[in-house]
Image (cartoon, rainbow, N blue to C red; front, side, top):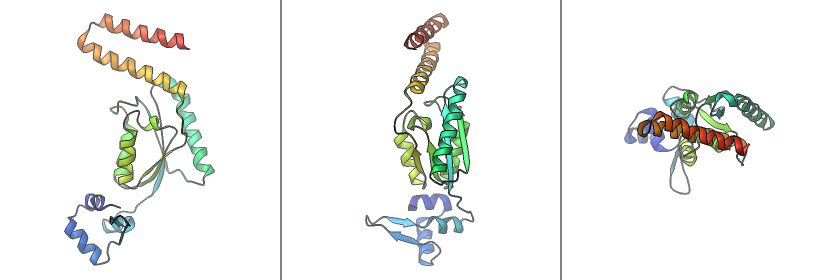
Length: 201
């Protein structure tokens, strides 16, 4: 665990952390890069918490119409973990846009656990199930708190992708247009997009 994460979790100063290391309260190793790696179990023992090392499944779809796919995501990930002998501790899922986090309550519940250092691995079907934008940022953030993101499928689901992207474009156009155009024009733009989607099918 990096020093900055220890300081945040324990709410202590860098000087106090050095004293804890000298007293043997928190063990540390020095990596070849020269970076200090503090023992997470020692840190949690010091702050009076038990590190749970949870394995969590996260699944997401954009609309209620895709609930069947949400169920498939969860079942596939459960089978994926079972095949590797991994016990799944929690399952979180959301029905919300991949680019709008306002309605993703369970994602924030997952994020709270990650930031609390309680999660070892998060399993997702595809990268965009976690976030359609900024996946690398979340991956970097999670690693800072000792959490690894495991993507079960390297390639995206093109059919689901197409449906979700169209739904999200429609939502964005609607929000933008409501501020600048009449409701009639908004309705027309959505009808055109829906028609193009039906033609593709």
